[in-house]
Image 1 (cartoon, helix red, strand yellow):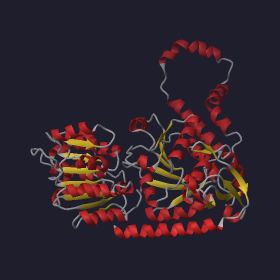
Image 2: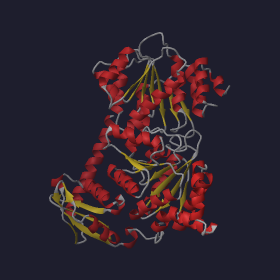
Image 3: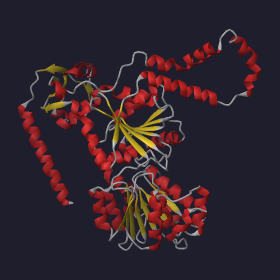
Image 4: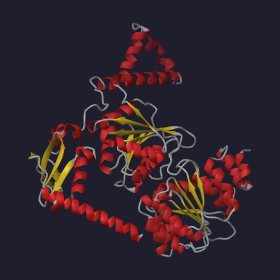
Length: 555
């Protein structure tokens, strides 16, 4: 039948595997399934997203459940509603031949009372997000006092999202004598802390190296000026006509802005971020899975739990602040044995961060050039020509064929081809007619030594610190965080610097700028940092670092 027969699974599960078309187990499945079937043990499974972790814990869990006993025996915690539903649907498919086995999903954004009703009808396995699970436990709507198995899926993601206290609270409702299976793509200190506190002598299975990215993904970066980021991402899209991608931005504001620009330029794009309602997020994800949306522009938090197998590219419009987040981003492509590309747009100042990511993921990046306009137009031309060649002939056109032949009788074959493809490609040729080279060539402000200082009528009274003002300016100006420097915040106003080459952009972008309904003045001023504010900032930094160290020790 297939290699799953050798793992020790019962016939009903093997029958479901055949129905689903699985041919052979992945590495994590091959290592975890026999172990979890044969031993009563805690387990840490380290493997990248998309390597089949759900089946690795799902099949053993289903085989261990005693359906004749109508109480909750297994709990699976997952970071997002999307992943919670995905795990539930997969387990239901795996268990289609197991009689009277009930699996219930618990997540926010749905009726609390309806979920309670499903639980009371009987739930052998509960798949839940930490927030909703904790809420229902506090309301005595769920009883997990008899569970024998607890699975923490995407544990690093849950902890990155701030669910540490929720997870600890939930596990305190569960019995001490249970098996805990922790699956994660990376192993940061917070995941180790959970393992130390709630697991007993766990067996560790690692597929690849810890924190290593999947080998199915190639990593590349493009060196561009900050102001050219959008033009660059547009060229990458145009140069890959069959691209189906997630584009990652750091902030909700940039996410929406990039998506809006792409839509304005005729692309099937959509934004996914925390300001959307759950119904809007569900609609966007449904459209993306059906390929009605070709480009999903997302924040890291909103994209957690996305599991779409045929994503061809992950594009990092902006690199994440945390190198481990890069591992999760790039893991959205190259899934289910397919290959993928993870492409990063970076400024020269960020080049050192590529080295840090290479060290984290254990793979090298290839530096590439942004495609030139001629190359893009040629690729689009022949892509469309191939589409036309492969288009099935609509026989209903036979009726109109004589008239069409008469209409084009004075045109030669070459003239007809030119007219057809001129009509098809005016959008590309017009857009790229006077396009310039976007690959970085100019030096940074650190090399020129020329910078401009600005006055802005926002200060501490408006709730700003130098870091929060810098973040606001970075978003308004679409500049890298390193392109705004010497930020000094006083009570009623502030100062900041950029390289002089950005002066015109700063003044034009902030012309007519308002904050909370109040007009804000911005102008060039004398290029001297404010010493008093510098001292305050250094003192604030020291206090913040001391607080962080105390917080870590208190854990």
